[in-house]
Amino acid sequence: MTHTTQTCKKCNKEKAITEFHRRGASHQRICKDCRKAHTPSGKKRIVFLNPPELFAPLAKRIESLESKLRAKARSYSNDPLEADDIYGSMIDEILFKSKPEDSDARILTRATWAAKACVRKYKAYSMMVEDEAIMIANTEDDMELVVSPSLSAEEEFIEREKVATIMQLISALPKEYQIIVSMLSLGHNQREIALKLQKSDQAISSAIKNIATQLTGLGFSTAFA
Image (cartoon, rainbow, N blue to C red):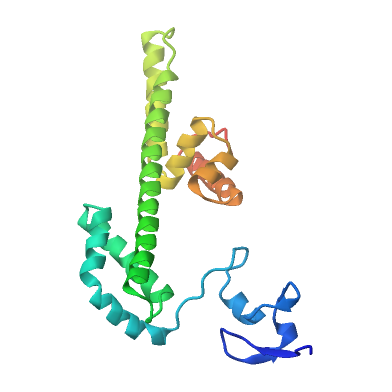
């Protein structure tokens, strides 16, 4: 017998079978509306988040595991502020994705996943900041190399003054724009910059145009607009 309706496991409403995506010879158990509401456009399906009514019982579970969760957070970082951030990520993970009936071991395992994810974000951010510092330093070194050793003392002084003026103009730009200028000076194209800074190609292109406009307004003729 062919079913014409079924109940959605998410909203608990009985709906026409056409309101569910097909899965092989049958249909998925969650309706299209609920799936769309919990799935960001263009991204893979995510785990459904807990409804607010589960927060209170989960908060009691968290309270009973407080010492273990705090100790786990501290085990991932000696920095008190970072440890607090890690702890916060663990709590969010438990509140939104655990169930009140889960065992302590299962809740602590989920907390561990959240802690590791948070640590990975910290490491990625640290690497990015370090790369930015290197790029800016390399840009300054490259600027020094612009001055040719074959110039006379007077010409060399003028060239160094120009370099200093350029660096001063660049330093007046917002930090993100300084990074983009540094990467351009190191030979990176717009696509590479977009990937490095995790921005869209359009955003980087627009930023470069804004940089050119700002530098031109400050009296510097740009060549990368």
